[in-house]
Structure formats: structure tokens, C-alpha cells
Image 1 (spheres, rainbow, N blue to C red):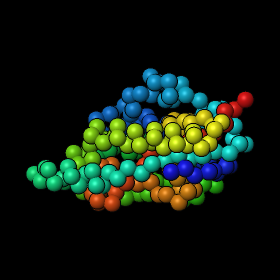
Image 2: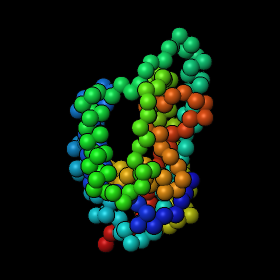
Image 3: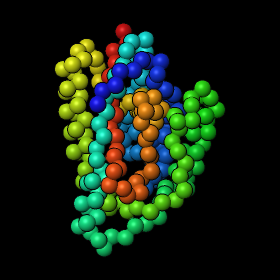
Image 4: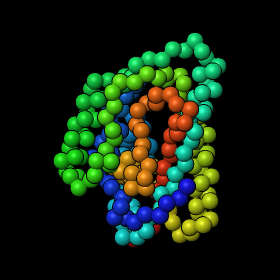
Length: 205
């Protein structure tokens, strides 16, 4: 799916890039790609240093039907019982809460839907939603959408990692009417979808 958007409608801030340092399941120091890969912070530049924010943009996104995929896994493994989530390390949860508080204070102009919802504990199972089993298929779907985009929208440069450039993807998608659910693993529902998002614009001269 492709949605035209102006540069003024793209919420971004350097603090977004700090979220990749938060501890999560089996990763007590945050994402191991930070500082290693060229398309991850701090090697990658901020969006306003890369794209011309005065030009038009396009959001390219796909919705992978992860609920249907998970339903098949559950039916094959009826012995797997759900666990209680979130299981984020306390240090990681506190770090995210601190970054979020700083963002809300700094970006007081961002509406509420630009920040993730807060949820009560839920039941699910990591094995039901193991990304190693479906992520490559979801990535392939986005690549195909990008190919179609480039054919129809010549002259644009596509960035497949906008969050690394400081883009608030929650707010970005809210601006096109889509609410992202950051719970993981998701509470199971056959209608669950997970989004992959890319951003296309014109390079800054």
C-alpha cells in the first residue's frame, strides 16, 4: 500500500533512535545491531539530514496476516500453553518509560495517538509468533510493494528503516489512520496483522 504524505506530517526526533538501546527478551543490552550495521544508529543519519523535508513523501507499507499464520502453528502444537506478558526486563521497561516521558515533554505538540498504548498483562506464546518463521515472507511482501512503487513513482529514494532515522513510526502510521500494536507476542486473534513500513522521499541536496 502506498500513501502520499508531506514532510510536515512526518513526526521525528533523535530520542526515537535511543529506543533501540532498551533491553528486551534475551537482549539485555538492547539491539545488537546498533553501532554495527550501517543502516542503524548512530551510523545512519537523521531523516532531515537525508531527505528534503520540504518535498513530498510516500509511506510504503504492507500488512502481513500474522494471525492466520499463527493459527496454523497453534493447531499443530496444541500442547503449547500460553504465558503471561509482557516479559520485558524491568530495566528495559523503565528505560522505555523514561524515553517516552522525555518525548511527551519535548514534543508536546504530538497528539496522543503518536505514542504507543499502555496495556494490561495479556496471554500469548512466543512460539505462536516466532518471527524467524514468518519475517522473511513479510519482508518479501514489502520488497514487492517497493518495486511497484518505484515503477509508479520515479525519482524517489526508499528508506526501509525510517525509525533508525528518528521517525516516530507509531505517529507516522496514525497519520494515515493505522494504529500500531507494539505488544509482543500479540494476544492471539486470527485477524492479527503486523506492518512493515518504508518511507520514500527526495534526497537532500
